[in-house]
Length: 224
Image (tube, rainbow, N blue to C red; front, top):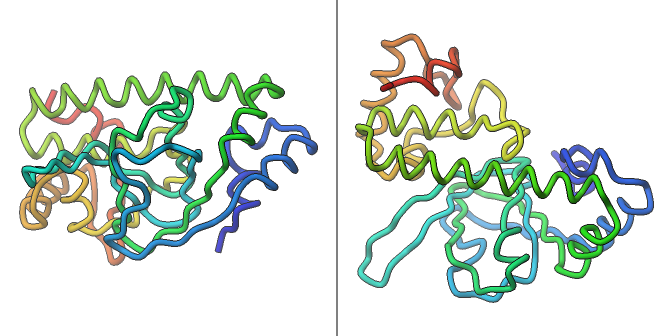
C-alpha cells in the first residue's frame, strides 16, 4: 500500500526535487482518510492545502442548494488538485467527494509556496498542470454540450488516462459501473448500457474488479 513518501517521490514533480526540497515537502504533508461518500473538501471552505490522492477515487463536483449536482471530473490515485484556488487565495469553488475509501495527502500552503519560490522544476510542473486542467475543463464543456451519453462515458474514461493529471492510472481501470455513472452524471444502469456500446466497439472490456481499456485512442475519438 502506497504511503505519503512514495506518492511524493513518484509524482512527476517529486522526481525532480532535490533531497532538501523533498524533505521540506514531506515535513509539510499529512495524510487523512475518508470513507465512501464523505466530502474530502467542500465548496466555500477556505483553501489551506494542496491535495493528492494516495489511494482511492474522488469526484470533483458542484452541489447546489436546489439539489442539482454537476459532476466535473474524477480524481484517481496519483492525482494532485486544488492548486488554482490555493494560488488565488479564494474560497473553494467545488466539492470533492470520496467515491470509495480514499487516502489523501494534504500539503500545507506554506510548504506549497516554498516549493514555488525555490524549485524551478516544481514551477514548470505547475504550469503544465494548470494548462492540462484548463484543457480538461474545455473538453468537458464540449463533451457536455455536444455529445450523447455514450460519448460522454467514453470521454470520462479517456480523461482518467491523462499522463500529467493522472499518472498512476493502469489500463485495468479499477472503477465500478456505479462510480463511472457518478463521474459521467448518469445512473449505474445507463453507465452499464454505455459500457456495452463501448465493448461492442472493441474499446473496453468489463472484467472482475474494473474495466480493461483496450483502445485508449478509440475512446478519445469515439463519437467524432
